[in-house]
Length: 193
Image (cartoon, rainbow, N blue to C red; front, side, top):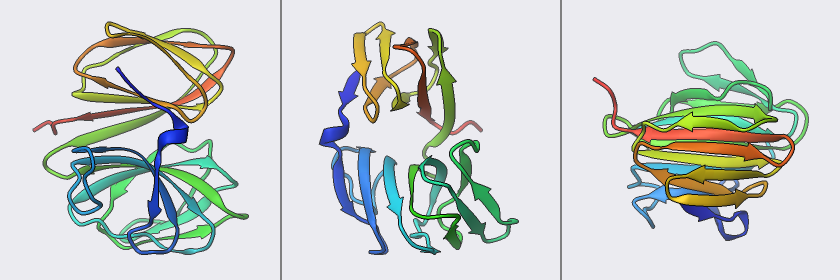
């Protein structure tokens, strides 16, 4: 279990230069925006505009802060994303633009290289201990709100809001909230046939 603290995340400009992204984790380590296998990041969106295009990449977007945004994804009906909405998967290489609902937002982006890896993102609001069976190659637990204690075969770790744990291999993890907590559970694995 590797623990990443919010204070250590890497800040960098968006690929299209339109804003700033906070890179939580990337694989391989130190990969660039053009050669990662997977990447988890947060971005502040302060104005309407197009998303950066990532050829050959699948992405899932979730809203972390703010009133939300309306996404126009080529080939789909527009959708309004809010903090309560389920994470939305879509190809990162189709034309996509965003219109803010009411002021800036912060979003969570999970991206994997199509054909090489696949991912899932679940938003969990918990108020009692839960055990999550890990069957993926890589599992990330992002504590979005509150605080939690994780217990896995590798040991225990406490996560405050903004912190992330990375677990490798198939293993169960018990998540115990201090009171109540909101988490994002991200799994990354080889694609199924």
